[in-house]
Structure formats: C-alpha cells, structure tokens
Length: 172
Length: 206
Image (cartoon, rainbow over all chains, first blue to last red; front, side):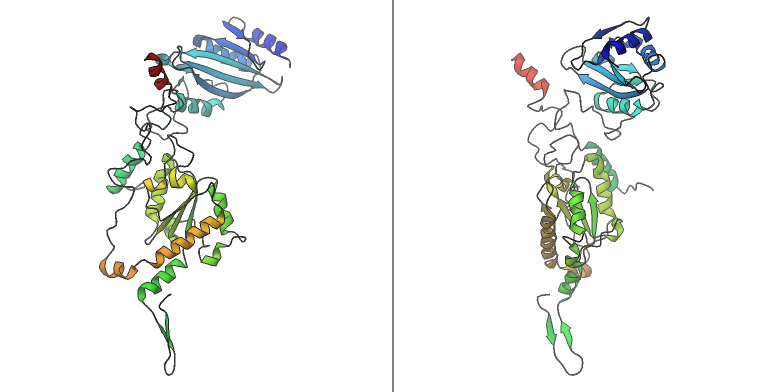
C-alpha cells in the first residue's frame, strides 16, 4: 500500500482521537499523540486499522532537552503490507505510558527491554521486570546521563560474592 | 620427566623418579578442560578440540561439560557481570587442583567492551594462570597457552601439598578491596566520562 492509502485508512480508524501526522524522513506514516489517548489508539489500530504485529517499542532520550523521552512504536499490517509509527513525548518526572500488550502480546519483551534500558513504566504490563540487566540493578543504562563505564558495575557480584564466602549455597 | 632413571638390575628392571615429577607428569598430560564458551572465542575453542588442530596430542581433548570432572577452566569470550556469578560457581565446583586460562582479550582485559556490563578481565573474579591475547585467538595460540600451562604445572610441588596440607594461597579476585582494573576514568557515579552529556553541559556553563 502506498503511504497516502495507509494514512487514509489510519485516519479513518482513528476518528475522534486527537493526533497529528508528521512527515517522517523515510516516508512512513507517522503519528504524534498525547499520552492520554494512547490506550484508545492502540485498540483502534489493532481492531479497526488491522495492524496485527508490533515490530518496535523503544524510547529516545533527548537529554537534556525537555520533554526528555520520546516513545516510538511501530506496527505492521500483514493484510495491507504497510506500517505505521506512533510517537509520544514524555517528561522525565512522569515517564509512564499505557502498555500495548493486550493488543499485541509480543510487545511484552520490547516493553520490558525499554523499561530496563530507559526506566519507562508501562502501566498495565503483566510482568514488568528487567530483561537484560540483572535484577537488583539500580540504573537504566541507555539514558544519556548514564556514564559509559557504568556506575559500580560490580556491586551485585560483590554482594553475591560476600554471601558465597560466608557459606551461602544457591540451592540450599 | 627430567630425572627419570632406568635402573638395570637382575631380573625385572625398574624406573626411579621423584614423586612430584610423577604426579606433575600425570597432571599436565591429562588436563580435562571445562569449555566455557561465552562468545565467539567458543568457536575457536571448538576448532582447537576438533581434528585439525587436535588438542588430543597434548592430552587435553577430553572436554567435560560438568565442572566436577574438569581441572582446566577455559574462559572463552566476553564475560558480563551478570554471568560472573555463574562462572565463579563453575570454578568453585571444579575439584582441586585446577587451572584457569583466560582466552581472548575480552576475558583477559575486557577487550573492546569498556562498558558497564562487561567484567574488565576475568582476573577480577578468578585466579588466572595463562592469558591468551587475540580476538579471537587462533587455536594455535591457545595450544601454546596449554603448553605454557603444562610447563607451569611441571614446576609445582604437589607432594608438599599432600603432606603439609593445602598451601594458603591468596585467592585472587575475592578480596575485600576489590576493584575494576583500569580504574582510571569515570568508574564511579561521581566521575563523568568525557563523552557524557553532563560533562559537556558543565563545560558549556563555564
């Protein structure tokens, strides 16, 4: 499908929801929305516009600009062979968005990774744990103010090592 | 065995040597490696054990996938801090005597991964006997490391350990004053890396 056809279908599906379309450099239909309408937008995109796969959930850190985070979702429709991109800006103090796992269960891991790396909260996510970094890690490494060499990267190991030397057994 | 002496006598002949040398000879020629392939170095490790490079020539081809049956830990590849606990557990499960080869620059020093996730050298958590540079090292280089390790084993004195109990060696990498090596630049939350945006902002504000 060409971009104008996709845009027409998306605009029709999203009737009554406030959004603006922006010109993306790659020509993909791109919507910019406020956080309040995201839940409804996900439902409409999956039910009415026929986007059946979530291909990307991530955040962009515009530190030190405000609003700091920009969330990006991309969706794919097999039937129409086209994609749509959704963007939403978030302030640092208020970095949470609704989850899209009810519509696209596959987005679960993407959201967990995004939570791990940027510290974005996904409201309603069934199991929002860290995906890559160990549990108990305190920082979000892909934030731009995170130092490149890490903050005490060995802290968790050292705590574990202390327990080990005191006689702790993993399966005891 | 350097001081092997055939003693000729009447009837059956016999050989005389030092017990240390006999034990070391047995140990060095039957190293059982624990292949710990953490990343691409693991492929070279497999090539080394395979028929072309044929580690069996040095008696070290019997790779066992249980640490309880191994005495040579080959840390092949990039070790992350998340993996470090597992690696240390594997090392602890190996029976004495045991040796460690750090294979590749990642496990030797962190290599190109000067990052928050990667251990900057496995000697932070394990006592390493031989370091092998290369990214990844060729199988020949690792075989060379094994030969060097064999020479190191030759110089050990196991009999003293057996008679006098295990020597209290400092267990490297587990001390309280434990630090990342290369701890020069931006290792704590207070120091900033030169590429850190906050550093740039501070510079601009000046």
